[in-house]
Length: 320
Length: 320
Image (tube, rainbow over the protein chains, first blue to last red):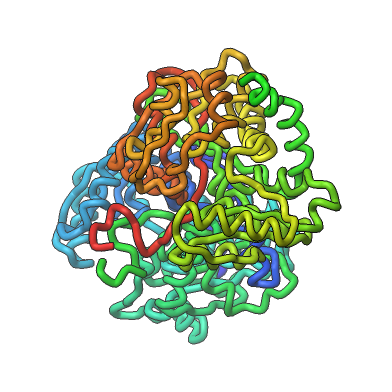
């Protein structure tokens, strides 16, 4: 375990910071008097919905791509994420002018295919099963020599995601708590490692959908416990915590809370209405979780992770 | 005419700036690589959708309320706007701890009634006709001695709205063009007066919905030409240019362009999708107009005026 934790060091996060500077955005921190008054605390929202490709995933993918040697990089990178990581990896690869092979299921939504394609990714379609995805990625790696960039279970990716917390704590050094969502655990591993290094007394709380609660189950049991068929509108948070991320979560995350589907949708809509910014369901999960944590009078960092969704299908419109 | 123009001076705008500081937000200027690449120019969006009450109207109303003498203020303020100005005036009055009487038609949407009420406005319902509204306002003024704060045909209101351009030009001094929507003309009068004072070579372009094109008709004809029954989704822009605003528009606005309903909806959706921020239909009109103006290689300021709308009724969802 200690070896895995050591794999994500403060040095690696500082290296990531230097490496991605100028290649991804430094996102703003937004506040809202209305939401503060409701919460009885001061909320600081790290707006990764404004990040390149519309999600924090740009940080980790860019760090991983630019950490490669020229010899490695020239063979390209590969992954099998159909979500924000796929677009982020495609964008990072194009910035370095190398190929990105993105394996996607043949039933992926057109919008996601279009996003990867728009960022220059080479799409490889496969059957929509986990086995077919993994086989396709293996095949493309064998054929091309491309480097796999895992969506979360990769120390360079985690280090990249952690830079969001570095920036947040530069802007608001006296935060008491940081809330971040947990899918596979890449974001919170980086955030927790960075935050606990910068301010050891800070509390880091993970939030996950009740319908994809592998992280809290694993956290309580002490071993990774996958949820076989996760069901949640927060499609970015269905993944199971990884072999590399889980030990970091065990060590640095203070607590995990779960939120209902209704709470996710209500949080998302409230952010739209009050803050006038667009977050996707996964992006609103940390704010939904803030209501379950005692925060009165404290300064709370909330990572709004992304803003990509189909505007024709809003969850509060039953007809859609 | 010169007297009317003289009524809105640079001094009045500078006074407004000092008066509203700390009472309304200094809104951010946002940019987008994607929108810049599409336009072939550099677009700088003044985000008044993030302003207090969700629209630039907070500026003018706050300036008018805080310019009153104590004797005047104690009797309160009144208006008959059911839109953003009503909420803005209610909020400004509460900041000064004086009453705000907001006359609203008895068929006003619940969301608008709720917004005015939430900001502490005293709502007076009337029949939904222009005559009934005016009579109700006269009556409340007679009874209370309140001061009328017109939504746009008022120099203090115009001066307040003009502070948005002062801030924009502080952030981006070398703008070539500023685009702002025209309803009654309060915003563009303030913006044009400020911008032409700060940078005389700047071009100020007004944009209005083709279905409420009184400003361009009046601009071409040289006299105010109301459109009897304006039809547009941009409900904040149905008003006719005013006796006081029109001479300022004639003097300082370089050109006016009109945009179709489809162009307004497309612009609004594109801002949501690319910038991940929420603008109301009226708020997207200036951006829609930017596509009709030669802007290649130039620096363009675009005022995104507001972000208040019913999230259950999005214009691109035909079912709603």
